[in-house]
Structure formats: structure tokens, C-alpha cells
Amino acid sequence: MFAAVLDPASVVGIIVQSLVVLGCLLLGTRYGGMGLGLISGIGLTILVFLFGLVPGEPPVSVILTIVAVIGCAATLQRAGGLDVMMQYAEKFLRKKPELITIFAPLATWFLTVLCGTGHVVYTMFPIIEDIAVKKGIRPERPMAVASTASQMGITASPVSVATVSLASILAENAGITHTSYSIPQILMVAIPASLSGVLIAALWSLRRGKDLDKDPVFQEKLKDPEFKKTVYAKSETLLGKTFPKQAHLSMWIFFGAIAFVTLLGASDALRPAVPGKNGELAPMSMNLVIQMIMLLAGAIILLTCKVEGNKIASTQVFKAGMTAVFSVFGVAWMADTFFQTHIDALETGLSGVVQQAPWAYALVLFVVSKLVNSQAAALVAIAPVGLALGVDPKVIVGFYGAAYGYFILPTYPSDLACIGFDNTGTTRIGKYIINHSFLIPGLICVSVSCLVGSGLAQVLL
Image (cartoon, rainbow, N blue to C red):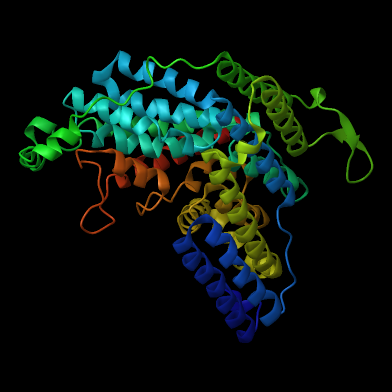
């Protein structure tokens, strides 16, 4: 289709450049998030210096917003607020241990929604495994779906990197799409869509595999005294632990900040009026609002909750978050350089396709998410292109769930941690790699989320 508007040499150039981008994404994933950002620099340099492309614009506003959220969440973790949340989650799970396969994914999903990152749930995995083993329930059932649910929660969180990125992209491209949706509007669709996917996946998981007392592989392993001792060792629990009042206070400060951000996003009238692009007064952008409120909340936690400021950067949330920032920086800059150069050709060749088959956008987003192992990085790279090609913003919001595709191969840290915490060995990577415990729950979560989200977006937006 490109041949109708481009000469053969230009078509070859686009193909070769796209292979450079794809190659960098594939190579970068072998080295983790930081590696992905660095390897993207190779692709960017090749595109600019070898092919003569004009450098694109790194998403500075999005990155600064992400940094502010990470800083606040990391301060919360250092203050002990995350541990308090985990304790409440454990109390919830142990009340009805026989329903662990349903309650575990709901708990991990909700924790991610509150905190904005799926990396906060590692503490929950040994607790989930302990509850399942004591009830004779195959741990794979609750643990695998709990891991995928923790990542699906990112698409329903008002302070996740992905949600902030999506809202920023829609706002920045409002002049092109003529439509911009706020974070509350996005969540009005994304929360029920994401939760529906998690619930259906949990229901499917109720009958997966055999119960432990009927599993011949597990029963054979139990004949080994060391294995039996490992499986039935002392319980992992946060119950009974007492946290200082500052930890509880930090949690409520963080919740208050989230509520305030959501309120300001729901009403333009509540935000200060500042000069816009044309000099006319307009409500302050939500990017700036989120940056300010998150910095403010982090500062209040720091000053009132006895946080050691020099240790904030050593928290798990900060390390994982800043890795994601660097990944987004490199991937988005490389992708923007390529797509902005060829956007006219792509629009001519593909706009009809994506308008007639909008699911094609979701499929591309899903695949790219796997390549970059990040929902935010996939959105920053693909959503602006979709908008430029004429994809309805309602479709962009409705297919938000498709940004979670990195469960396809069991290489994501939360999945690997989940496997490691299951002492029974039921949560596993199969002989052929692709046949692992997270594949079907992940496919159910994403497909149901996209179906429900697409319908809600057309009705509510």
C-alpha cells in the first residue's frame, strides 16, 4: 500500500529502519529495563546519524510526572505505609481461606490500584502460598492469577505510570484528536474493565490442576523429607506485627493525595487558570497537578513520619520505578523519531486499516508491550501513533488493557518471584516455556478487559 505514495527506495528505507527499531527492542529486553533504555540509544543514533532522521521529542512531561509519583510512593514505602497495607490485605485473605483463589487476585489488584505499581505485592506471594497449602488448595490456582492481577491493576490505578502516560498523551494530542479524557474519565472505563478481567480469570482458576492430595507429582515429591519440611515450614505472616503510628499516617497521607488528584482531574474549575498555548487562560494541565500533589504528599510524609530521606532511593519501589522511567525515556524517544518522520506515509497506508479494524491497534499495543516489558513504554510508543492514524480516543481508552502483554513469556520479575515463592512447585514454567502458569489467566484478563472496556468507552465517553 505504501508503493502508491512512495518510491521503492523509500519503502525499503522504512522497512530497514523499522527492523532497526524492532531489533533494539528485542535486544534490549534481554538486559532488563535499564538495558532497554540504553539499547534504544543505539537505535536512535542509527536512525539520526545513519539514516538522517530528525530526532523526535522525548516525553519530558510524562517522565517528570512519573518521577514525582515514584518519589512519593518510595517515601511511603520507606515510612512503612506499604507494610501497613500488606497487613490489612493479609487479614482480608485469612478470613476466608477457602476462597483464596478469588480473594488473592482481588487483593493484589487492589494493592496495585492504590500504589500505582505491581512491584508492591511480592510480600503477598508467600502469604498466599501458605494459606493455600494449609487448605489443601493447589497454590498455582491463586498465585498465578494473583500475579497477573497485580499487573492488571496498573490499568486501573490513578497514579500508575501507564495511566498518567495515557492521560498525558490524550491531553497533548487534543489538537489532533479533538478529544481529551481526564484520569477520572479513563478510570470510569478502566476500573470495571480491569476488574472484570481479573474476576473471570479467578473463576477460571478455581478448577485448574489437581488438588494437592490428588496430584501424583506433588505426592511423590512429599516422600522427600527435605521437600516436605520446606512446604510445611512455619507460616509467613504479617499478622501480629506492630507498626508505628507514622506508618499508618503515611498511608492516609498517600490516600489523601490520590483522592485530591482524582478530584482535581474530575473538575477543571478546581484547577488554577494559567496561560495556555495561545496565551488564553486555561485550567492547569493534569501533568503539572499530579507532579505538584505527589511532591507535596511525599514532602509531608518525609516531614511528619520520621523518614530517613537518604534511604528513600534504596527502596524497591524507587529502584523499579526509576528503571521504568529510563526504559520509557529511551524507547519513547527512539519510537517518536521513527514514527514522526514517517507519519504521513503511515497515515496514508494504515489509517483506513485501523479505522475499519480498530482491534488492530490493540494487537499492536499488546505485542509491543511484550517487546518492551512495560505498559507505560508501550503506550508512550504506540498511542500517539494510533491517534495520528485516526484511531478514536474512545478506542484508545477502551483497549487500555491491551497494554499488558508481557505475561506471554514468564520473564517478568513478579512472575518469576511468584514461581520462586511457591514451594510446592505447582506454579511453574512448562517444558516448552510458553506453557507456563500465567498464560491463560493473562489472556483471560486482557481479552475480557478489552471487551468490557470497549463497550463501556462507547457508552460512557
